[in-house]
Amino acid sequence: MTGAELLGPAVHRELRRLVLDGELEPGAPLSVPALSGRLGVSRSPVREAVQQLIAEGLAVATPHAGARIAVLDDRRIRDVLAVRSVLDGLAAAAAATRLTEADLGVLTESLFVQETNLRAAADPVRDTAADLEFHAFIRDRCENPVLIAELVRLEAQTHLYRGDLWRSPTNRRSALREHRRIVEALESGHPTAAREAAEAHVCGLITRVGRG
Image 1 (cartoon, rainbow, N blue to C red):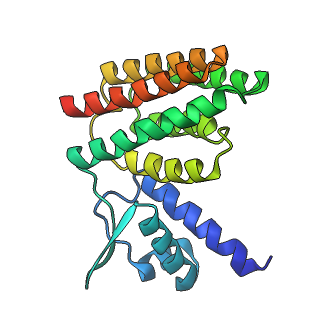
Image 2 (cartoon, one colour; image 1 turned 180 degrees about the vertical axis):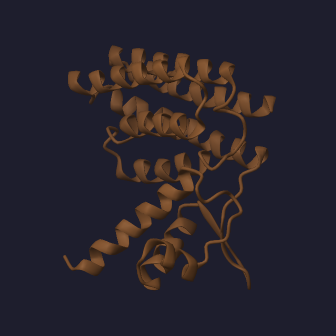
């Protein structure tokens, strides 16, 4: 594999991280020359990475104005979550019969980290990262590449939302409680229970978005 082939994915990963960490905020322009200078790379891999962000729904292209980070308002995030609830349920159901003892241990440790974070002051970047990691771990063990690809897109779009979901103590407690139920269902090995717990969690997110 050539250096150029290695560079492209690395540039995409870095831009994606900047978006999800909030360093590039929703609505911010994605200037290829500016990002090229910021990352210290040529324009070609940056241009390709921006196109990937558009394909993932993290950015939008505006005629005569270039690309910008997508902005998700309350209505859009509810639409995204409605679809994600079904797909999260499918992934959890598939993972329920595939998780090993070691996998369940990773999820238990993730719950411990989330509980520790809950006792600390709210940090949306930290809590978003923990949430993404939790869901990604379950998603990646469903062994369905099509389902995984769709969830990667939807999960990323979910975390573009800059509401108060990760600042409210009530919301943070609710998310952890729902995550525990998902892990308990996965531990049972029952696909239906896992699907219902995962769907209920995302439906809870929809409710919390509606509360404003």
